[in-house]
Image (cartoon, rainbow, N blue to C red; front, side):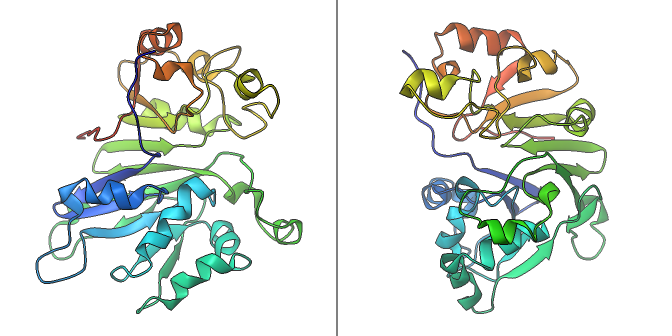
Length: 279
C-alpha cells in the first residue's frame, strides 16, 4: 500500500488579502493553523486573519475545533438555526463559547438564498463573498436528543456551501448523503467542487469490521457502485472536482490501488494536506 497521512478535513478560503474564513472547525485545527503561517497572529496582537467560521453540520468532525478557539479574537460563526441549537441548547461543553470576551457572535444561514459572509469596507466591493446554504437531506448527530430533534428543521441538519465571488463559484460538501438534485446543479455550475469522499463502497465498514452500518445509512454517498458519486457525476472539463473527508478504510487512499485509478480516470482529485486552489 502506498499513501500519505492526512489530518481531518479542513478547508479555509480567502476572499481578500489577509482575510480567511474557515469551513468547519476540525479536531485537528490547532495543528493545521500552526503549520500554516498564513494564520499566524498579527504582530503585537493575539488575533489572526480568520474572520469567521462557517459550519456545514453539527457533526463532531465539523465542530470540535471550535473549542480550540474559545480564547480567540471576537469570533463569528455562521450556521443554520438548527445547527446552532444542536450545539448550544443541550451540549454543555459548547456553552464555553459564551464565556468568550466578547461572546461568540452567531449568524444564521438561511437555506437556498445567497447572503454576504464577507463584505469589505470602502471601495473593494468586488471582494464581497456570498454564500448559499444548500440542504442535502442529512441527519443530526446521534448526540442530539429525540426531544430536541422534534423542534429542529430536518433540512438544516446537513448543508452544502455554494460560494460566489464575482463570476467564480465554489461548492463545498464534506458530507454528502446524495439525496435530491440541487447539489448536482451546484456542482455543474461551479468552477471548483470539493465533495465527500468518505467511503469507496456502500458496505465498506461491514467488510472491514465485520459489522456496522452502510455508508448511505451513515449519510455518505459512496464513490463506487450503482448511483455512487462517480456514476452520478460524469467527467466535466469545466469543473475541477476534489474528494475530501476520506475515511482511513477507503482503498482510494492507496495511490497504487484500482480504486485510486478509477477515481483519477473519472476526473477526480484526492485532497491532501496543504492543497491550494486559486479561482
